[in-house]
Amino acid sequence: MKKLFLLAIAFVTLTAAVKSDGDKIPAATLKKLDGSKVNSSTFSNDGKPIVISFWATWCKPCKKELDAIAENYADWQKETGVKLIAISIDDARSSSKVVTDVKTKGWEYEVYIDENQDFKRAMNVNNVPHTFLIDGSGKIVWSHNSYAEGDEDKLYENIQALAKGEKLKH
Image (tube, rainbow, N blue to C red; front, side, top):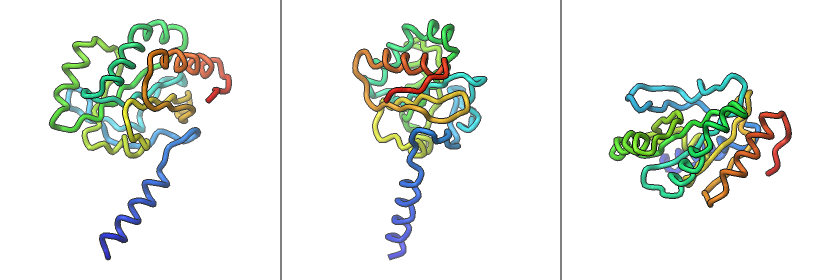
């Protein structure tokens, strides 16, 4: 009975923690590629947009999305000042593959590992890839789950609109 009660409390807590438009980035401890720790509450980009992309080394659509963005990332940064933060949800057993993938792909993103998946749960990410767009004040303004070729174009349209101070189309 006690376990059932605790499960009910955990469910209510997780349900209340669902992230949607207008919510702030929740605090969770993540691991940098060098093994040091960082708290997600410190994510910032001098008032400019941030893209947070959840991915995994075993997820082919995730890598396709990050590769597609990488092709234009320098131009995106120059035009809008956007910063992309890639969050790997690989667990401790496969997290060593993250460093290899990032080096092999040559991604210029900030990459963190969410080994315990605390940040994933706090952001209500059920499947990867899952991408969030954060405005300059740290509020979630758009999110997208899954990846199909060309999705990066819609993401960039939203980044441009956000950088201009326009409302986003969902």
